[in-house]
Length: 381
View 1 (cartoon, rainbow, N blue to C red):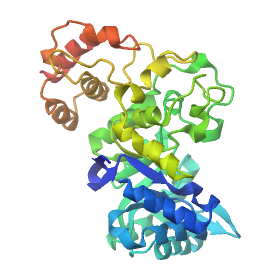
View 2 (cartoon, rainbow, N blue to C red; view 1 turned 90 degrees about the vertical axis):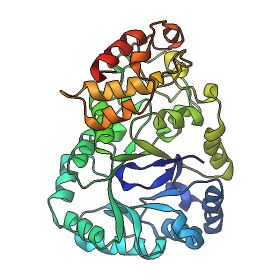
View 3 (cartoon, helix red, strand yellow; view 1 turned 120 degrees about the horizontal axis):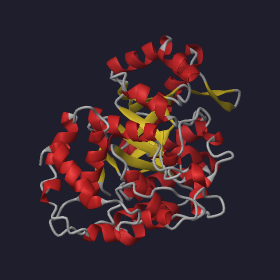
View 4 (spheres, rainbow, N blue to C red; view 1 turned 180 degrees about the horizontal axis):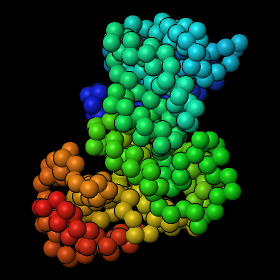
């Protein structure tokens, strides 16, 4: 399993992670074995937003013998009240819920202390302008949470979190459909009444989020990468076509600053399907051809960093050049962090000979040679 650095947390997390919300569906021993099986496949990051005792006990027991090998995303503000989940910012609920999480997970710490589910201005105010955030900082100072994170489905809220300076990573919902829709306080209303003509490429605010994460070294872990399974079914997919797990995992991992996609599992076979991404061929990972051939899409002329442009006779990593160009061009000046990443590529856009063979392979009709000229001029090499 390949590992990636999760932004400035410095944690090296598995590209494919474990989303734990389905654990309570199964007998405890079965779910414990599932987590332990995932560990054997190289998975080392797990999300525990769930407040129910069963899910937390399953995770704690599963990793008890290897706690130091796992990175746990544990959420503050996810509480269990009268036998059900309640998102709550009141300290009389938040503190005992977190202390319960800490006790059941074990080890005396949580690797990634997540400010839970901030999707609206009201959510933000309830977290950031109350004693809730004081509690988060107190836990961080004491080392009880090693790093501060935040979970959201709304790019506007994610950008606000990044700009606080103390949020080190984001748990964010990413898939090809979500990327083409504007911010929304209600995730589940995002596609109500949508029209294929409204798909106009990556939403600018999401593009800005990815740029900021890259610039400020804020890592991203991904939730809802499969859109609850809807993207596996052409009848439910907003594109009108079905994707495979490998394609959706690859899409998420090609977004700037993304370190890991957290998949939900019911069986070891599903773990195997996700982990198989690591040995998948380029054709098996190819999401771009699916989007380009879909009846509902509008990525024409826009680079999605899919890699179809390879191979380049000058050995330019065209997708990465395009990614850094897109990140840089949104700013009055090229951020030094982006410039450094670009220069580290070795063969930069200036090496382009304008043969345009890459353009023949691009599913979206991107004028690549022209973009190489612009990138070389922007970066000066």
